[in-house]
Image (cartoon, rainbow, N blue to C red; front, top):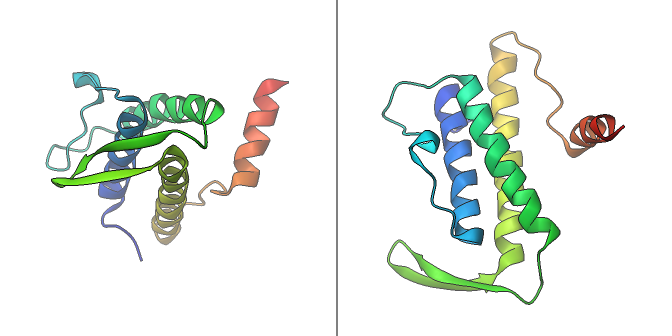
Length: 130
């Protein structure tokens, strides 16, 4: 019930989140953001940093989102055209799916993962705003 090894799931999650930011903003990541499946695992801190940077970018886009904005481009040599909210919802759904897989992997290793749901996230956000 997981994407692959825990390290692969983390890299996949981070790469995809960067891809959503790129689709929404045109952002071109620098070398410091490069995460490759075939490279040695760069460590949790590096992946967390990448997720933090791209996560902040997604929040910024979401705060300025418009139901009117359409995104156009190509994916796999096929053209696409859809509202920006589709990418924002996909980013949230994709992250939720893989956070659950990561939690499952950690549990099977005997590690109690943090709660991966939105309520737990909100508790952290609310506590940091105080």
